[in-house]
Length: 322
Ligand SMILES: [Ca+2]
Ligand SMILES: [Ca+2]
Ligand SMILES: [Ca+2]
Image 1 (cartoon, rainbow, N blue to C red):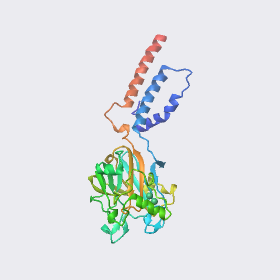
Image 2: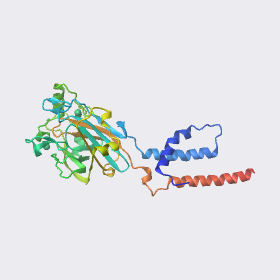
Image 3: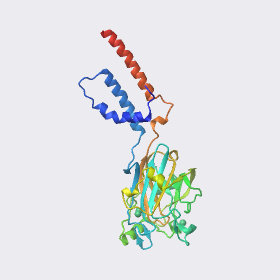
Image 4: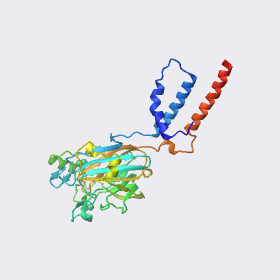
């Protein structure tokens, strides 16, 4: 038997249901043993690939935000610079890809009277801890990506960070003091405040309080680079924000090595430095595929041995019968 590739493992996985519903009229020793072996392989294959939660389309997991919760002075919604539309994540075996659709340029919104002369994107946080955001920040158990080089993060380099704590920068970016104040303002102007996959008042975030919106990295350990992606590259990867909504003027995309983040359930989120809009994405990152591990006994080898053994038994059996 040829070496069993990942594709043939996946083919076995697809055939699992067929194997289980074979006609039972003539159950044979061969068939039942082969079925057991196939079911075992399917189990290996299925457990090696974790399912993603969320709104899936073309292999991307999307968080689609309200289109009437971006605050640009007295303007609420898509006519303003701060409207965020959506956040999306795609993964393959080696890389994680992030895409953001919004009206806010990567260089931020020019504002000479605030720190660094612009109100930019805050950092993109990933929380795998199961704790609320303030607790995970306090414990420095966040991961984060600094992709907006002009923002007011407490770390200098762009890229992926771990052991991250977060800080408030709304106070130095003409922003809201707390999330409750933001959502009250949006509602006052007729908008619908949302954090995309999470409700605006989800207890994952602190609501009331003074300058407690934590939206930039305070500190963390840099672990790797990000690579920006242009529109063509994003389209080739299947990105399609237009499937859900009209889209904003800016699409920002980047990728990084998958090994820089853990696997499992996460909440990711992003806020403008003024907290004039924000969005959260819930999802799950997959475990590495089983054929990445070459040192364990190969299923193909096991299958070959089983089939060879069965052939010997059958030939002896046929000799006895004849
Ligand atoms: Ca929005
Ligand atoms: Ca700023
Ligand atoms: Ca929002």
